[in-house]
Length: 262
Ligand SMILES: *[C@@H]1O[C@H](CO)[C@@H](O)[C@H](O)[C@H]1NC(C)=O
Ligand SMILES: *[C@@H]1O[C@H](CO)[C@@H](O)[C@H](O)[C@H]1NC(C)=O
Ligand SMILES: *[C@@H]1O[C@H](CO)[C@@H](O)[C@H](O)[C@H]1NC(C)=O
Ligand SMILES: *[C@@H]1O[C@H](CO)[C@@H](O)[C@H](O)[C@H]1NC(C)=O
Image (cartoon, rainbow, N blue to C red):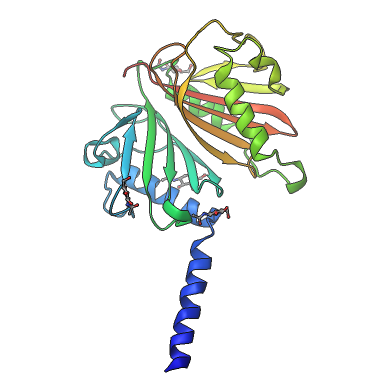
């Protein structure tokens, strides 16, 4: 009897220890369940938190039943980065076929490091008419990029990645921000479908008084990437995603998704 109780207690402790770790495998599985939902237009297989689940589309909270997740899209390209500290993931996908092309950035969050449950899905979705929108061009630029994992000795720290993401978004309000970013000489910036290479050229140096707000981060040290969803207040109340990849200590890629209609 006592022995059984002890074993039960031990099992509970082991479960708690297991649940306390947010793993890359768990985050990836949840992100894949989101992609499957998007390709089928069915949300029934998503493991949403029974209470307090939130869905946000273009910076507005809406019911998931009224969201774009209930429409099936054929995806041309998808890529996911994983943040085991925040227990969150960032997935971008592109759909060029069908009535409405899309370039989408989605952050998924999990409660208490438990990747078997989704507490929020937060999507910025650009389509025809949004900033420099051409999904085919964006797909072709991004498809050609190298997103292999960075060897352990060369990984940028979480702090470096967060600072780069913040400095990037601060360039419109802080004249000195651009000079704090370690631009790579072979860096590529894909804004909508507009390509700038090297990406450290023609940058803003202040000028706006409104800081880009509502920042939500997903930081992946193994990929050397940070994604920030935000509202691009320095130029307008635009839902936005800025993703930056740092390789060998220098910015290698910048991707932006900016929704002009709010
Ligand atoms: C849901 O949110 C409310 C209000 O923020 C909080 O009191 C409650 O503990 C949350 N429930 C869960 C299961 O997280
Ligand atoms: C996402 O991309 C991977 C390749 O990177 C592919 O194997 C997978 O089928 C894609 N998922 C969807 C839902 O299109
Ligand atoms: C989640 O995991 C991180 C990293 O392992 C840890 O620092 C944090 O305390 C954990 N949080 C919870 C709620 O278990
Ligand atoms: C997108 O760009 C491609 C390649 O430059 C071009 O062929 C196509 O017409 C563009 N699509 C739209 C909708 O403008």
